[in-house]
Image (cartoon, rainbow, N blue to C red; front, side, top):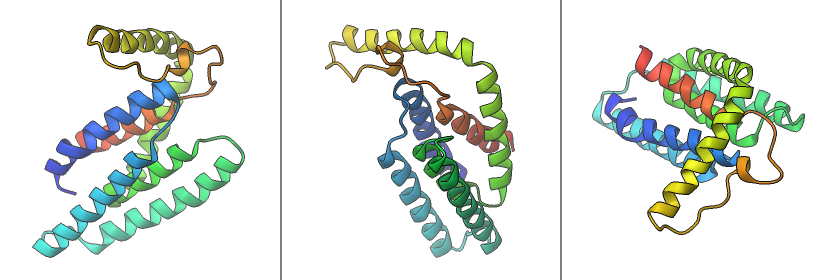
Length: 175
């Protein structure tokens, strides 16, 4: 995928996904669908222009995405992962093509580090949620939904969207 498309579209969407997953423990289906559509349009455009990197890249990404969906559905049925996490990882495998395995390993390592830092993350999450709400108050914007960290019934678990976004960033900017 073209690096300009990564900078213009992929990086900001992943940053927003990380923020909303931290605040609300949700990855919006519309964002995952947008990533899928932009990947499809970008792939079609590169084939039409004759700049397509190769079918091996497409097959590798699609194969990795298929494995992620199958294994992810099993893990989701066991309630070990969220459905949004699975869908996002599968779509990103398409974006990364033959580097999908590197992405999956990087996201897994980032997830492990995030799990180890969970006590620190909890404290940062509460401060970030207060700051997020304060920005809306200062700008006199309508109140957003209340972040999970500020509710009485905080959702346990790890906001894995952060690890997925970090893993994607490692592949995007590390190579």
